[in-house]
Every structure is written in C-alpha cells, then in structure tokens.
Image (cartoon, rainbow, N blue to C red):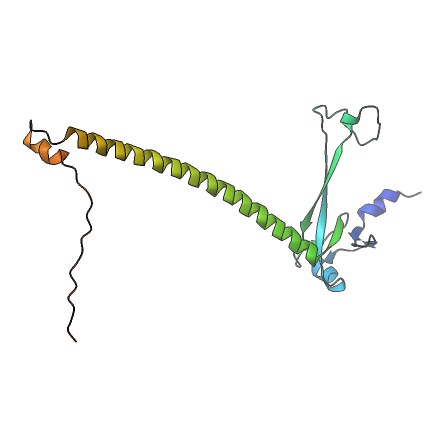
Length: 178
C-alpha cells in the first residue's frame, strides 16, 4: 500500500483557463509553458486561510456548520512568474490570458493614480488653506500699518512704517528708425 498524497507533492499542476488541469512530474521553466500556450502567462497560486475569530484553536479546516463564525476564510492570490522562473514540484500554477494580465495591470495603475490624486488633493487643499491664512495675516498687517501712519516719535521708525508697494521696473527700449 502506498501513500496517495505523496504523488501530489511530486507533481506540479497547471490549471488552464478552460478548466483543464495538466500534471507534470518534473520541474519546467515558465518560458517553456508559455511557448506551448501562446497568449498566456504563468502565475503561481498562493492560498492562505484566515480565521474570522480571535479563537484560532477552534477554527479548523473541518466543515462543521454548528458555528459559522469559526469557518475559515480561504483567500487565493496569484503571482505572475517571469519567463526565467522555474515551476517547482508540489505547487499549483494557473495560465492567465494576456488580456487578463493587461486588465489587472491597468486596474492597479488606476488605483495607484487615484491614491496619489487623493494625497495630492489633500496636500493642495492644505497648502491653499495655509496660503489663505498667510494672505490674511499680510493684509491685516498692511491695514494696521496704514492706520498707524508714520510715527513722529522716532526718525528711524518713520522710514520703517512707510507703506511700500511693489512697482514694476520697466527698462527703456530704444526704437531704431528704419
């Protein structure tokens, strides 16, 4: 009598988009699989089990429906492989179409842009509020200086309290007669 589970660890499984599962009994490179399946990428399936409760001892893989809060939540993620990567025994791989990969990359890019726009929008809003507050302080200071006017108590403070406004400096341009 043999152990039927031992053969599962000595194989690698490639799941096709049409539902077919291909078993290989030797390591193979991702580029070889991609050559035999044009228009597809190879992805490693990564499964993890999360327990929704804090009581991890009572959360098991058996399907007892007595307490549904202890049923584990199984999450499956994929990791795209490079053509230079090697598919190893004991793992499950999935073929992903090129269109699906492009959709995923586009969605990831859009999410990143939205996140950055949210940050940029918040930073711009903070900067605008800061600028408005500074403008109010400058206007308030100019009004106060205009009300006090030049002081005659100290000759040095007379020049310091004068209201200075910005005036453009224009250079003269000579026109040549033609």
